[in-house]
Image (cartoon, rainbow, N blue to C red; front, side):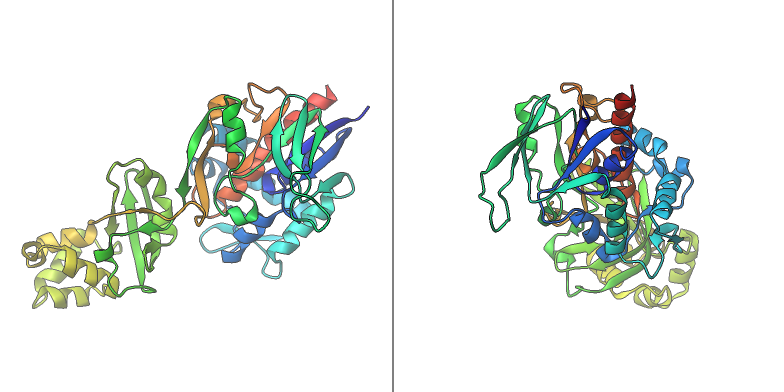
Length: 397
């Protein structure tokens, strides 16, 4: 009798787990609570579809905070992901910052459709089906959600030989990643680390906001702890958005009173900034000669003491190491990704749950964190790869 593999979650982790099983002697079911798979995959493509990054595998892995996910990415690297995409007809290109995108004419939906078509000869997709519970041998689902003929609460028990849970984290719940599964895991005694916003905008105290909404702080460098990133920051009605502030989220989360530093003029040394300020007829003229933007000037004039403002040496130091304390992060439902989830102490190297043999977890529901720029999708496909590969080897043996 054919082994049955049930995969719950049709995001990149679940689809990659299914991909590894195509040549195995098994029945493959992919379940998703939405009317189509890959909802978050498509949403991620709205702001520029970063599939992965062109760094060397060693550099790439260091962007992750968890040894577990680093090992998964070692097994299925950025180069392996690009090779697979080419296999299904998706050509990629390297952007100016090293990020890897589909070729210009290829849209996110085309990537998803190509992947689905690659799977469809063997994979059965079961949609509008919500995960409710599981044990060692069977899965319980709600089959009646969001369908004209379905009745909410219409449960079904699905037996399996292997189960992969790729249920997502808690960010962007509209795509299906609502974190509802956590209560089931807690009841089973599976250790979870609390979900926290990641790659999130920063909420500033009101007096920092001014009339700056929509203004851009260009070509700056932010740092916090051992994390730093260069680029542009956008001012919003509540605070700041942009890759540089996303990149320091992890370090800020670890601080009791989170504060980060901004180098407002990273192209110049402190000594050079000091020379410009010293030669200027007054500090305001010096800021103008340094070509600091409206946001930087507003912050300096409002949050640098008069004594420091009038001292070229101290003002140069403030420009190069401008400190900003934050009020917090955006709600987890709004952010790009989240940290937290199933603790890696609960998992084998392939994502199998220690308490439930033949039950695997993959993707964002595992506690790992990474910046934007292709690392998030790569982490998901790599985790799906290791679970799918482990099941394939088990079936073969």
